[in-house]
Length: 118
Image (cartoon, rainbow, N blue to C red):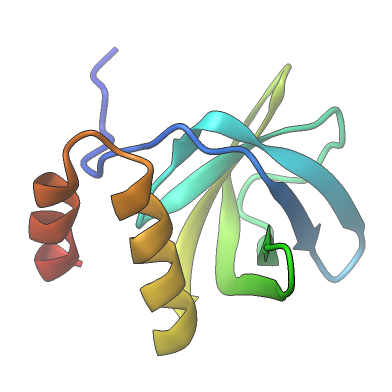
């Protein structure tokens, strides 16, 4: 099977909240699957492929709580979790997501190139 992922994914783990019209689930983002286009979360919850959702990626520091807000849809589901493809993101959230990726990769220049293709 051909790998269709075109964006660099980085190792990062944090709490993620996924909201659909029918459900809300809280999980941990997979430590290897977050990119400018989407993320994979490890969960045993079941959401239908194609379901629209809102994703909140929580970034907490010692003195602040920050989150990245993204709209997307469930792109795939397997026995270990869900793949969510991002559809829209506000400029502030995009800035934080880009920085999260830049600081957690060994090849920040590739993330820099990818953002221009976004």
